[in-house]
Length: 187
Image 1 (spheres, rainbow, N blue to C red):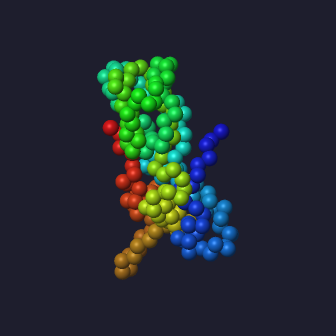
Image 2: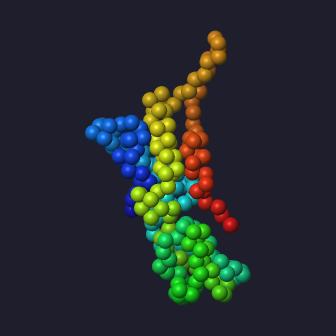
Image 3: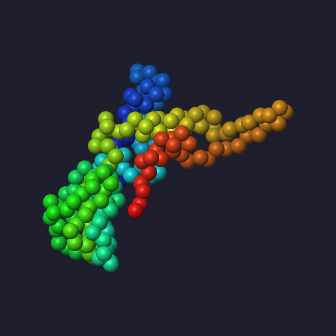
């Protein structure tokens, strides 16, 4: 069973951006599908969750036992509920956590198999999604709709010479630019 992803924008805000009347519901099903799909695609592009959700038993392997730092896969971290090292619970209050960057420091090195259960994402709710992420989604959806209308064919003309080609770009450049600062950086 797949997890239901909350879109990073409301349908009403998207319709306002696209200049579609709130009363016009003829494209609502398509727009909702695009909101969910583009939210998932943006999360994959960034490597991060937009709206915080729970991560259950994220595995980490510390073979060499030399690091005091655990880098969680998602950040910012809203809550760490449990960390298990080699089958034993670690007291969360004994750890120092840089929640913004998802780093968890232990006074002694991490060793062996570590499982982390926590809640993380860029925003705690749809209402708090940064404006540039919402704008990136709206621009992406507008590009998809424009491509749907044109059949994805672009053309250029210079004098008597004309050429047409199909545009397969996955993330529109304007959307990628807005999402770039949120991309996950692995240490």
